[in-house]
Length: 576
Image 1 (cartoon, rainbow, N blue to C red):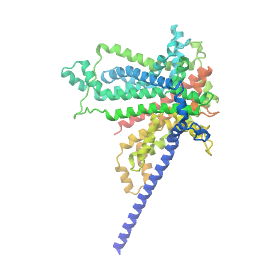
Image 2 (image 1 turned 30 degrees about the vertical axis):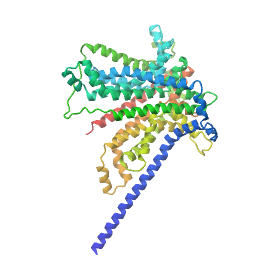
Image 3 (image 1 turned 180 degrees about the horizontal axis):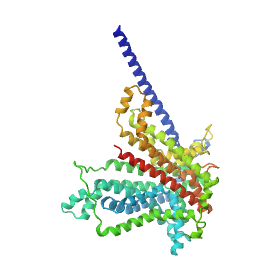
Image 4 (image 1 turned 90 degrees about the vertical axis):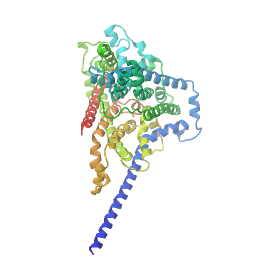
């Protein structure tokens, strides 16, 4: 009798285990379907509609007539190929200029005993804090006729700023830190140890650098140059702020004009968007392949400390070089922005009598500026929450399960990295501005939430993926053995372990979303204004002080959140 009872109990436990496993598989399947639906709405749908509108010009009227007619007509227009040529020339110029500035600075940072090294790193991080459009406005205030430079020195550089060279210079100052940090970190990891071995074997210092040190950093240099190229051709704010006075247009500014200026050209904008997306995607694929295929193994066993080289007599020239780069990159545009937020009028100059807090008071009141600030903060918080949730779940499915379709899901999470923001904005307009939808987020604040989430989704996904790869499977297996469901394991074990880097990524998302410009200009509905749109419109309307006060507030908020994210990540790295 006892053996029968034991046999039945074992059968019951096996049945329960099978049911739990079956429920787990069905739960994972349902979660994967839900994630595919969410990522399809956020990522795949807008990109697909850009392609469909480019192929079928009457798609917005519900017709598939005359396929490829818009492609032929747009590509045969007189300005299309010059726009592409300008875009490629601009991207290549910025990439080469970024290399010319970033490689020497990065090599000096990585190989020498540079005084105040962390301070220079912090100053070169600031361009990631200052939105490019805000930096362009700062340079305008500084260099244009009757700007701060003319008030202080008696001359202006407006003719240079409003030219191709000036636009490329401004863009280079915003993106060259990607080269600087890539090169400096690559050389810090390899060090000068192998170059010292070459010196011992008779190589001159220059030959050791060219034949040993530089090849070790070559993958990082090339990948960062491609990234600088991609960032340059995707950027809207700097070309839009400086380009009209220089009579210089790019694909990104032409796409926005076809949506903003009458007559509206949806199909032409879609074709140009596809052309821009293809160019950016090609550079992105080239960058990933380069990083995947050009690794160097420099570890030969016992780790050896590499002593940085002393600057010696070159100390003063190197510090002067870093100081000039930091001044142009960070201090000059930031100083112009902050100074303008505190002066009554630009013509009054930088004097004590001209200082005021009226611009900040106007924003703090319940007026247009205060509403724009609250809208941006609310949208940024919603974006951080949505992308954090979806990013964590997607990373868990891809890293911790063997669910079929996870590779396609991983590809969807990566796609926004290669898509320019204006392409996402165009796709959302085309996708949701159709009469077939019974309910649509178009012309509501939800469309802004969708655009921000699509653009910034890769941040939480990559942070969570990196954290999940460091978590072994023993804790989850132990919890499952003791009867915990997969959902409970995910909530009580996995999420707490991933929480610090995930929270850091959400802070970054919040900081970036709060100042996003191009999709805000395209998608902001009537009566809804964000902080970036407020700054842009105030500058166009001549209320520059109010706009720069808003910019200063956003810089303080973004800087504080990014600093918290950095401290949180650094604290996580020091944990045993």
